[in-house]
Image (cartoon, rainbow, N blue to C red):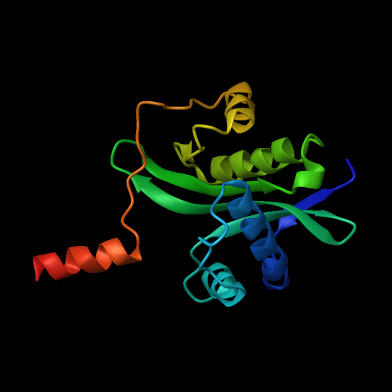
Length: 160
């Protein structure tokens, strides 16, 4: 292995944001990233920590991340959500994705969660095959439902 994995630090958030933007471009959502480096620092290291992030580093460059946060399932109890597992394009196929997923699973196990969940785009067959090979169940009969900021605002206006 020519990379190492560690807990993220505040100083890493600029490079973390670059990887998030790289993922958005890969997913054809180049302009969708609204979060800032300052948001990541505040939300990951502030008074009300909202996520935990692992970074993969090679030669002092962040080349991968796994970002998780706690959730609660009414069926299972405590769970964590893997928001993003990102491996820079130049590091794909190096074992880095497996190493990051290993850290997430060990972290969830240490916390005593009963499930680790995440989403994958239905067209991202390499990722789907990767997750299934690791023993994850890709539930194709569920649809992701979201209200974005505009949707929340419209919703609120309709109930008042």
